[in-house]
Amino acid sequence: MREAKESRRFAGRVNGLRPSAVREMLKATESPRITSFAGGLPAADLFPVADLAAICQTILADDATGALQYTVTEGFLPLRQWVCRHVEATGGIRCAPEEVLITTGSQQALDLAARTFLDPGDVVVAQDPSYVGALQVFAAYETRTVGVSSDSEGMCPDALRHVVLNSKEPPKLLYLVTNFQNPTGLTTSARRRRELADIAAEFDVLVLEDDPYGRLRYSGADLSPLVTVAERSNCIYLGTSSKILAPGLRVAWMVVPDTTTFSKLVAAKQTADLHTAGFTQRIVARYCDSSEGFERHLSALVAAYRQRRDTMHAAMNACFPEECNWSLPDGGLFFWVKIPQGLDATTLLKTAIAKDVAFVPGAAFCVSTAISNAMRLNFSNASPTRIEEGIARLGTVLKEALYEINRR
Ligand SMILES: Cc1ncc(COP(=O)(O)O)c(C=O)c1O
Image (cartoon, rainbow, N blue to C red; front, side):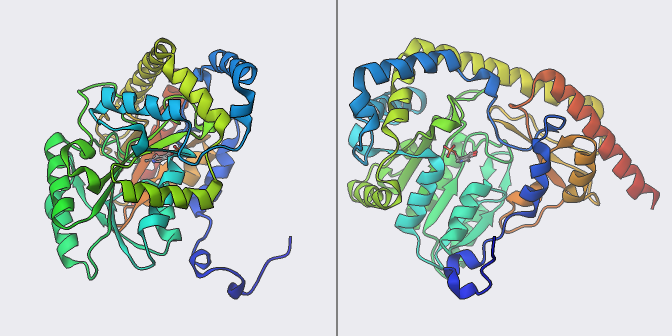
């Protein structure tokens, strides 16, 4: 392959993009020898393969043209109708199918939102740390993302107000993952949701609430999404089938209460991919609408992930140095572990990979404040036995590194 040397060949927005050093390092962790707590992958052994195979057969027998032909950008109507029932039953969001846009994963919804609302130089406000995939999208549109600190209840309203008041340009977008956030596992409390929604309304900042993990709750009670507590036209809510069914289907949804905004997003999606695959939309619609099968699958998933979360929690308590700390997430896929000051998680990752265990250093998710002494651990994608073995090995890596810095 020849390399293009002149940067004039590339658009300005890609000249600044570099493959992440951590991602390069993590390529090594694809080997089956390695226990990887790095990716945010759902458990492949829990995909409902037999049910999906039967559904594919039925769709091709009953509705091959619909499944295989070009189709409308907004999405498959029975799926949009199911989304309305689903978001109302689970989050109290009342919406009509005309307010639901089906997207090719929530990642595309983030891209469409950036394409539709953000010009170069615009300010986006996000939790610090935040989901890397969203940060990459905002960077690709040459915006400036400002991180706002959180405490145990979620993003701090005073810190948000400070950023809004001191920003040269008023922020255009507030990006929030309110349930079991990626990477921290933190859930935004009910009180905080109201306070953040009020600030967004006061300063006319659009709220983009990204909720891929809401249905993966292992303890505590469900909380209302911002769209139900705030001025509706000021909020967009994102959901996805990736973590509750299978990410390979690439089927997700945006709830967009404002009609003008909805039509702009549809136009943006037309330029991106015309429409999300009609075949996979039908698979999700049929599977999720067979409420018995879907709810049974979800209960089994929640039970298995709760066990994996508890196994990792117990193993860390047993094997990690006492200077490490973390809190038990009520749901989702991740632990966020603070390791002692003086230890650098990116350096530790190299040692960990040599001992056949991997994680993502916290630095990868930082927005405005650099954090070198934290790591994100995924618990959904390894069996309880592998979790115990991997955490024991990681505990040894941490203890040896701590011994070294204490000796100096
Ligand atoms: C917070 C968050 N948003 C969006 C996504 C992307 O999800 P999808 O598979 O629906 O594109 C992820 C994936 O890990 C995520 O963690």
